[in-house]
Image (tube, rainbow, N blue to C red; front, side, top):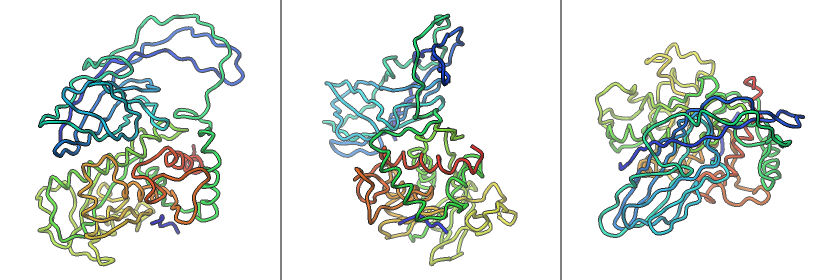
Length: 417
């Protein structure tokens, strides 16, 4: 539904070789690299088995660039310790020869900016009962060492190069230069947005993250008679962060976008009965018995939807416990809805998807929170399958990412960028 508009893991670190790069200014005919400082380099790899069944499993792999220079493009390699074989993969191009696996970035995530993470996943098979995690990784050919360190301290000096074309597009650039095959469909999408929506609306997800300095607080509307454990509560918060990262890892470093990550916290839960929430700590505020829209409601005094002026003076938990969006989980619901208020979908669907790398309905509805449109009655030229075209893709695609970037391109001037 469109926007409402007015486990098992291993962490390893590796030293990554870096190369000094000089940027040619517009109109320059040559450049001279006079000196260079040593750059800090390194990475962290998080390999997690997210689901397992007899003979098969799903895994998620997260790569974090710990250095102060980008890794572009990236290629991760490892050897399986057993009989594992990769099947379907997403957010990567993966190949396997014997036990050796090579995973490379795809167009929309091939660059990992400094202090930024990217992730990919795959399904696999194995025989017997052992599914041990890999013991070592290489990123761009450099073995994991557990350390970070400087790049070589004696780079060449007084190097002169021939004229070099200034790069355009891509993370870290200020030019709009999507792949040629996406220019027309992106223009069609934005023309449709301008014809359909009021762009003076001031509670897009973009407005929310700019008001909070890159943070989103959630309150969960537990619209269900099922109980929820402490472990599930915390897993939901972690999953919301991970799903935000699926979208916004692609925004880090992109044309003045100011945040490396959108920090996501769950600050409250609402339920019909306190006994359904099986924890006793005070990590979140709890709201019981306030029924709105035939569902438990978090305190309106704390909600941005109700107080877009940022005045949370009547919020029981104080301004720090205000919530920007609601995660409304309704027992037995099919499909979903999303807008500036948050996202709604089936309670069973969301909880049963906590081991999935991409929760399709949630990611689709989160797209609506940031203004992305539905495509029920038309399809952009040359595009068939992307997550905002409901039912056509289970994962965020390159076209989805470019639509998100296009929104920032058109709205960023309202925030002074």
